[in-house]
Image 1 (cartoon, rainbow, N blue to C red):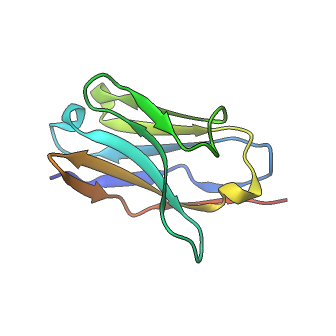
Image 2 (cartoon, rainbow, N blue to C red):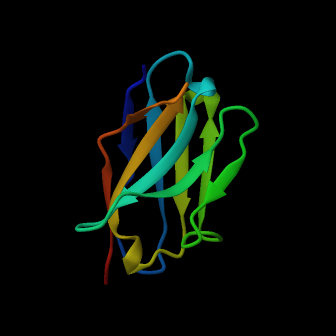
Length: 116
């Protein structure tokens, strides 16, 4: 239905910031609910943040509230994750997800490493 490509990951020191981007192909981007997940080695994939297709309602994991912000630009077919005050526990592969009509699509992931 849609193809997703994440970018913006990298190595950052604790307390630093990164902005992840997820570029979507296709012409129906505005009809998809978008979200960011992350997965650390040996752990299950977890939801970080989501934004709805209709009203743009957002939700966040408790661990990132006040530090991360999800947003979308439908004109650019892109969803963003602004990450501030990063902690070592934020280290993971971050995945973009698009969902519509009960079906989801994953991007390939981008590595975020928070370390001194």
